[in-house]
Length: 336
Ligand SMILES: [Zn+2]
Image (cartoon, rainbow, N blue to C red):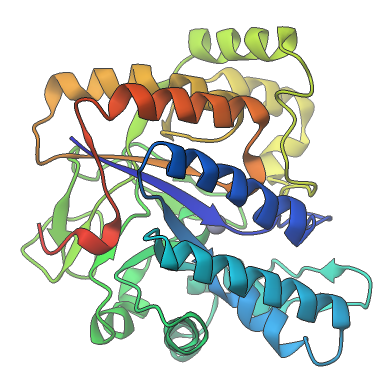
C-alpha cells in the first residue's frame, strides 16, 4: 500500500486565528523531526490565500512581515528536504482584514463556489502563480478548503492548464450542508483512486485523478472509547499546539445537537490529529485486508491540531507501517 500523510498548513478560522508560531512553525518542526528520524517524506497543503494576504500587508505591519518571512523559510526548508508542497485554498482570506492587533475574519464567502466564476478562476490562478514565484513550487495536487470542492467545474480549467492533475479532497461517506461548508461524498466510488473530468465524485477516464482521503466509519463505541481515553490522559499530552479557535458550525451551537452529533455514527477522514491519531494503525490494518499494492492510504492532519501525544502516535504508526508499505508524496504520482 502507498501511504500519504497529508497536513493542511493553515491557521484557525474562528474568533481567534491563533499565532503563526504555535499553529504552523512549531508543530510543523515537530512533524519534520519525526519524518527525518524515520526517513519518510510528508505532504503539506498550504493555505495560499493566507500567504497572499500576509504578504500584501507586510509593508504596513512589521509583525506580519516577520510571520511571512518565517513561513517562507519553513516552506523552503520543507521543499529542500524533499517534502511535498501542494495547493490548498481557503478563499475567505480575500475578504478578511487585520486591525493592527489581530485578524478579523469574514467567512461569509468560505468556499470558492461563493465567488463568481470569474473570481474563483482568478483566485486559483493567482494562488498557483504565487507558489511558483514565492517558493518555486509547481503544485500537482489540490485540496479544497473545508472539503467544499463542488462545483469543481468553476475552476477546473485553471488547474488543468497549470498542470495540477490530482485532487485529494474527498472522503467516502462524508457530507455537510452547513452555511459555511457544502459537500456530499456519499455516492462517490468506494476506491482509493479514480479518474474524473469536472465532477470529482463521478469516475470517468478524464484528466484528473482523485486520491481520496481514506475514510473510516466512526460509531458510538469508538467515540465513547476516545472520550474516555482523553479524560484519563495527562492534559499536557493531549493539549493542541495550536492556540486559536475553530469556526463554529451552527448545528453545533446547540448543546443537545452537539452531543447527538458527537456520538452519531458517521464517516470521517482518517485523521492524524489529536486523540484520533491513535486509530491510525487499526484503520490501516482494516484497509490492507481489502486493498492491493497499488492502492493508497491517505491520512489528513493539521499542524495546529497536533499534540505531544499525536506526535508519539505518528512515530509509532510510521515505524510499524513502513515495514510493509511505502510512504510517498503526491509529486511522485503520475497518472494512475
Ligand atoms: Zn483547510
